[in-house]
Length: 363
Image 1 (cartoon, rainbow, N blue to C red):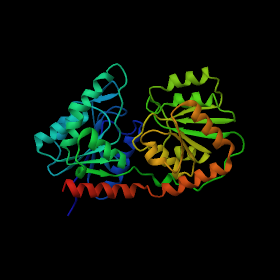
Image 2 (cartoon, one colour):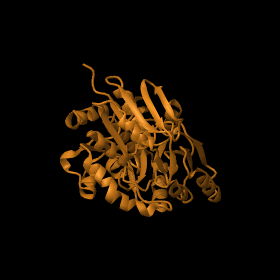
Image 3 (cartoon, helix red, strand yellow):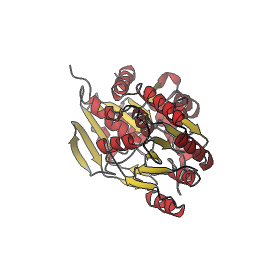
Image 4 (tube, one colour):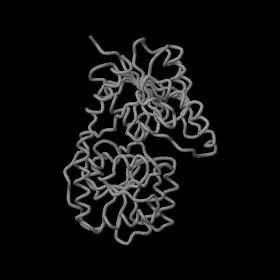
């Protein structure tokens, strides 16, 4: 007997860049081996229409982006047309799509699961609306869900205290790492420390903090920035103003090209304001790299006792980078801790944990 189909619902999907997009893609690839999978998403970053990608049906709805939020009225209509018995899996870190799912579920009397990736902060000229939206709308969506998947125990406590989601309906399922990123620990390269950042060039990741830190370091460090986003031009200008000749913006890299960037690096840095569970840090750990990161939610849960966590300000970040650049014993120990910890995170394990959630609350 075939298993019920899964509808993965997400505002963004590859080729759009981001950690949530990667999670949806990895889950869909593993689920399609045992059941039909459709990804219902917006056309932002892609083209509207229905395609089959690596055996996964991808339905992209026409959309506009307002204040970093995808608005696609077709999501609601598409949900109402999904087959009866399908399992709905909503990925949430933005507004609009969650309430469409909740409304369609109410009309259909359909149970759904919410995958809570990150509690975003206010930004931009419409940012003042976000706290009220969270209180009145998003919280209601989470409470209406049959189950809420969170990335860490800290997130489980957060959704319970902030959004009043009963602990009995939360399930901790971490992110995973694809097999191609696992590499042996390597000695550092000769010359300047080769530092790597991978991520979206957005306010949340705060690469500006990293650039200001590099302007303060005492020892030679070169930085490879992998990723794209709305702040790329601004960060390029900042690097020039600070006189940082050792910073290279590579744009987006995927697959073997991204794995090669991890292989060429001596250390990984994550200067974020906050995280859910940073996929790039997991990939760097799997690649046997020491990780230097800001001591903020998300980073702390993943990297405490593994990476070098520092206060989220440039001077502290600069001191930590100098330490990794000059203390090879420390760098080697951090690299070994990264590799050891990463072995606990694989997408095969994550997919099975998600399947367990389906059995618990959707079957």
